[in-house]
Length: 167
Length: 123
Image: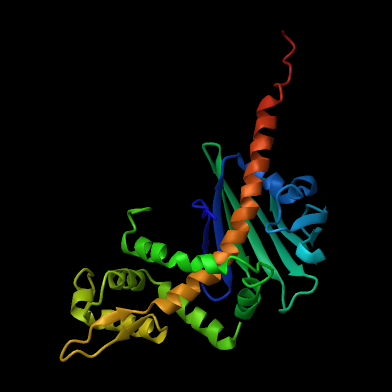
């Protein structure tokens, strides 16, 4: 599988994950794709997971709820409350899964910056505890770990030669 | 995941959260080096480098061997490998999801452009 060079994921501190990705579209379209049920159903999920129910009450204090169908008839539901809704630059909400195996809600903040019709989406996920972050990184994404070992060389090469992207 | 593994991951990420320590790791990726050799490219003292090395050692990222008077530092691959694997699975999942979002946005952008501008009345 090819690695998405535009997607950067880091795990700063003890309970955050920060994802950054550019999209070839204006910010208002990216914002709409994150907040409109009809649009979410067309992209949200991977590896056999897809949205089968999606409700969004897009206002501060409004609730959202996603239900996804996955491999082997698995079902997963997540929901939360919108905290900040500032189209097209910022969206903040809480998230918890119905059958979550760790305590607490996750606070998710999306920041969108548009430059020359390209939008950078930076998503900061702050988990309630360090343990929650550990668990979420294992669930429900059950494959793909093996490929990561092949990337160690690339990571080391990148550390050693930060100027060169692909030596 | 076991608590021990989780604690080791925490230690790995904490150790790599500093630019000087990342530079030390990068230098050691090219081969073993002594504290003197490691300190050379940096505008900081050898004791300061030693402090950073201790953090890397506690995280299991660096070991120090004894060769006569020299004590070269060596990069240990396992913790880095674990840390890379830990994030890569998550990253790949979102990479796939975002690839779908790319396709959707391409459609939406095309629709945006295809929509005729509102008539201004004159023509």
